[in-house]
Length: 131
Image (cartoon, rainbow, N blue to C red):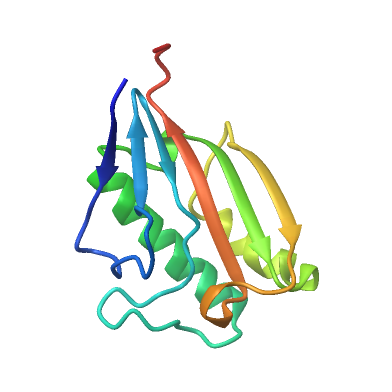
């Protein structure tokens, strides 16, 4: 089965050899996204985890939309934080974007993220159909 790159001009262009997302059958796999301003590509929110989480999820919403998906189609989320003490701040914003049944989620603390980001998120969306 051939894969298809998901492209949208509503996010900053990738800064390396990767796609914003890939469709593989009925599934869409996003790359990790940080809080880049779609117009400038620069990180927003400095160290504000809430502001960065909001921007990351808005960017992911644009990618999902370009793939014909929404947060309701998301089945798995991975969250990377540079400080686990900011989990609650991230989680408060995250909770506004997802509803029950919530996707499976992994959250881990990492030493550093691209562009000096405080949070990075990737996800998997599915059509719910078996390929």
